[in-house]
Length: 469
Image (cartoon, rainbow, N blue to C red; front, side, top):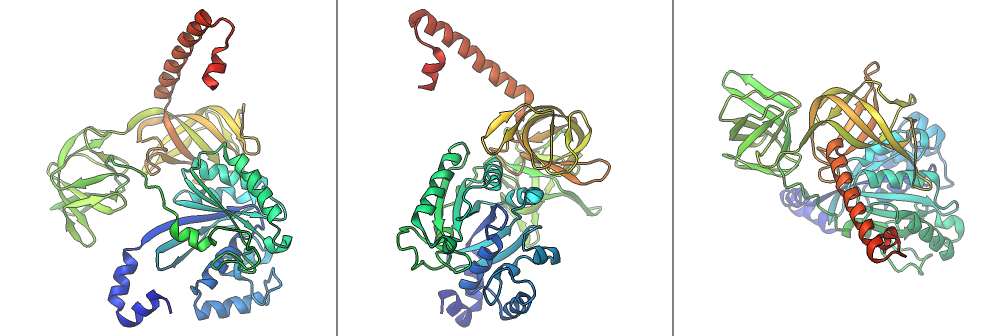
């Protein structure tokens, strides 16, 4: 019996308290088609004793009809719940599963590997702290492996575990694993991912998933679950207070509050705030939560603020501290993942939704799109389904935002088709167009002065070679 099991039997209230205070990690499983993502999650839950008896009975029954393995039951059926997923043996929609160990609580997003459903993968990755990218040992690094890795990098995921799966299909050959490891490291050098780890596994047989593998004694590292329990997740330092207003709470004549989830920083009763875009200021009268009034609230908490003054604040506005204002502009640059069969067209009007604030806008220019195989930036006049590019947007009303690299909550937006109301794209804002242009202009001035200095004192040298080191 585990310590958690003993605690449940002896003191259920203490168990609930301990469980509530555990760290929560959100992670995504992604990779190419049929790399074994759903089977891996099924194996994690099965070997860690997190599948209930009725779930097990249902899987055994369904395995007689939808079995894609030679085992008595197909663990992938635990997360592949759609009829079409079971018939085809692939993941289509994002499936979420929850489990806990003695160290942590986990929320898993099992995402599709098929190129057609890359948009679902991007949706699942948007709130995750870590990504498990599976690679089939028989096929090595594929196009979707690169695409998913690049999207994880764009979405600010700093921790990646490369699980080289189906090692049983290559006789647990160490050379195969080392070749895939070298290939991925070469590609990952071009990505903004701080922490990349590797583990050879067999999700079907259970090697190195929860328990160490007797078939791969040459692997010196930890099994996958131990890595998940011990990896130290980098905290996002969103110290500046941000409260995007989701709802104006007006239940009666005597109460008017502004509800939302804090996207950064903290707030206390008595603090001075400013409402954007109006610029009106007031002080916090009370902080109301489901459990009652509190004195201080932090990032991630759902709260309602009441203010000492009656000022006009609506859904989509942002409440901040006066000395910690975000950027505000009608022109911004962003990286875009396009998610629709119809291409992103320059100058076509869409609904641009930044947090709860919606306005009309369009992409006025596409700087480039990225070839995920070579990471080459190519000229483009439009973006097709699953393509990723850098664009400039103009919107009808100024939007308040932080750069996505500074705050994932206030720096993200979605693009909505005006006719169908379908979400057709997702974006990560890098900054206002004017600020970026000013920064590039300063850099270009430095280059001009530096080149002149080099030519004067070292006529046989090239300035660009010195800058490269």
